[in-house]
Image 1: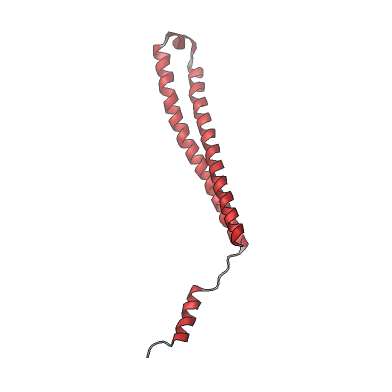
Image 2 (image 1 turned 45 degrees about the vertical axis):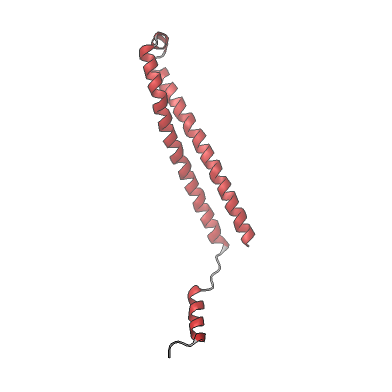
Length: 117
């Protein structure tokens, strides 16, 4: 007994379905990836900015306590500017590199999607 082969083939093909993705779905997927790229850039930039803040704060504060010239010439504002300049530079450099890397990946993905069509 059992299921005849023709019936079985119909059910198997019906389960796989005949679905064609619309171009709008591809575009939505690319937009979602771009949004993730922005979030990833901000996250990486913030991570490196905090590391740069600590790395620049320790020698700056030690120098102000130990080196006579730094003690005489670097007030609190100068110390804050040194630390924040390093943090800001680290943030923007890292965010820019991450954004460019993500754009490169998206361009490769767009090229692959164009070739599929």
